[in-house]
Image 1 (cartoon, rainbow, N blue to C red):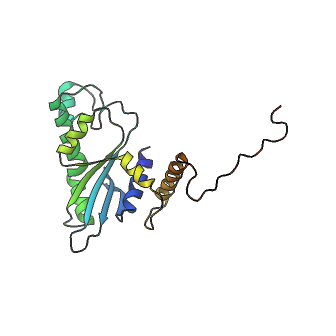
Image 2 (cartoon, rainbow, N blue to C red):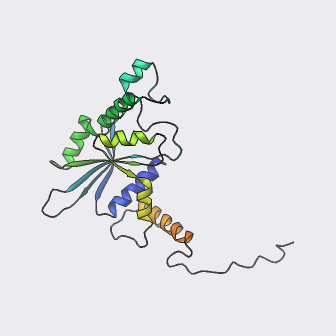
Image 3 (cartoon, one colour):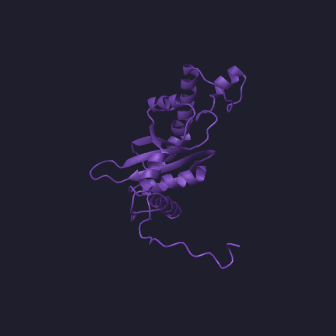
Length: 200
């Protein structure tokens, strides 16, 4: 699911004229997507995108901060209702790891020195909506996957597109068209007659 979501996010960015690099690695650290778009007489628009998509979440997006897990004697993936203070601590640690870790800063700077990177999180269904507010308060832009899918369902295609992502987007657009009747470019056909004897 995570790979499919990243592929669709990349396709959505490509259709908006972003050049993208997916799966940037620095040691054991990885960046889901880096995207850069030209702007005339300005610095390029630069996004660091992390995809955190789930449709049946059982816990928080952010794991327990290491210090908090040690203090509570719990695993980082333990599921329990956090206090506001605990949630802020976990989100802050997660944002540092995902976006502000030294290796990731170096990776972004080496690809486009001096760019003013915008941090973006793509998300699906969340169990605790308050967590999104805390993530946004850290200066991270939130982008629902539903918004991306809706945009990809728009009739027509882009000249600037990916390969696998483009195929997936076409399938999504085709299905969206079928929900409203005949998909664009598709002729309505009568159901074929059943083979002789099929009705007993």
